[in-house]
Amino acid sequence: MNLYTQLISNVIFPLHEKLKKHSTVKVKKDMELSQWMAVDALEEMQLKELKYFLQDIKIHVPYYQQLFDKLGFEPQNIESLQDLEQLPLTTKTVIRENTDALKADDAVGLSRFNTGGSSGEPLIFYIGKKRVSHDVAAKWRATRWWGVDIGDPEIVVWGSPIELGAQDKLRMVRDKLLRTYLLPAFEMSTEKVAGFIDEIQRIKPKMLFGYPSALAHIARQAEKTGEKLDNLGIKVAFVTSEKLYDHQRQMIERVFVCPVANGYGGRDAGFIAHECPEGNMHITAEDIIVEIVDSKGLVLPKGESGEIVVTHLATRDFPFIRYRTGDVGVLGTENCACGRGLPILKEIQGRTSDFIIAQDGTVLHGLALIYVLRDIEGLEEFKIIQHTKDKTEIKLLTNNQYSKENEKVIIDSFKNRLGQTVEIDIQYVPKIEKEKSGKFRYVVSHVKTD
View 1 (tube, one colour):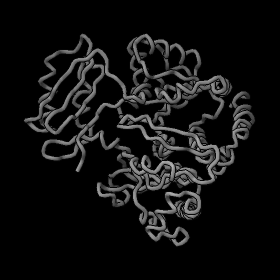
View 2 (view 1 turned 45 degrees about the vertical axis):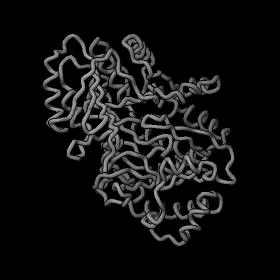
View 3 (view 1 turned 90 degrees about the vertical axis):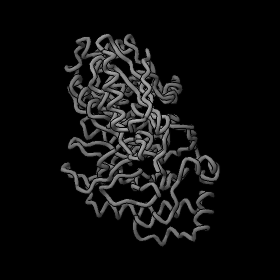
View 4 (view 1 turned 60 degrees about the vertical axis):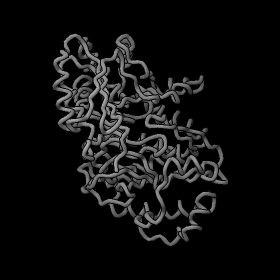
């Protein structure tokens, strides 16, 4: 760690957080100790925090006052984490219909946030200072696993209008001090990406942070044009907000010559899990309780695939309790070789809308179709949209090495997976648009699973 990074990490950033009345520094220090606790000790700590959290919101949050009274639920009587199952799941609809009642009556300095709405209507919710402190601390701890600290040069490739619209003078000064450089990922034209590559070469960041699709796109263009990005001293590329595919990881690692660390979370659910150098996704157990549920909302055992449900223990000002993320994943059953007792999120399989439903009702992961397209020569980008069980649209962006003879291969392969009478509509387009949030999704299905 150089002197400038030490100054930022140990003096300037702590002062910044203190002035904002954030407890980030203390939370991070505590997390760096608790991560080494044994699994049983971590679960005991979670239970203690959960009981305090639920007792607190029973007193201060009108929605939960009424819900607990209706259910006859007494927080002080819970004896295990499994007792959380006595409470109903929280959906985006519940939050939309009860936004004001979900605010703690003593909350101070709530900030209004919203999701990007990439899978539907944006969700408006509120975040308090405690939640901000804990989320920042969780990310800070995770970057330090890879030898990167606050104050090290970082390039952020991001497309959310929320971040891009908030670049006021104060934030720009802060980012300059912290050596955080933002590259807007909304437009990824050849010219724009060439400029991004120049910036990366000039800044020589210790860390890249952004969407896997955006970083892979930059890497792909650099490889095509022969731009050297393997000698910049980048220690890690943190990716988040989209599903990370193997071919993206391989592309980023090959071009930037650095490991890729996956991060999983969201504006609404918080920083849920981060990948350690041993390759496992560790859940932020100090703040987050993760359950995996089936289509009926019943909790599944570790090792089985289902929807990820999150309880965030640092959200007392606007609680997220048993919140349905809409993502599909699997909890790990083993401990990590890194020695951390933090539980493992073994797989993040994507959003529920990243799964395709065949005509006979078979649920297929989007990869079943992605693999058909990924290695076709001359195919630069694609997007698969399942409108109904009987119609799937494929948008293709091609170059002059692509042959239209591939159409038969694509159609036959898709029909073999989806059903022989499914209509496969291939559209050749000059550009494939991202979602409103700036994210990119290879697969979108409008067909609900049973």
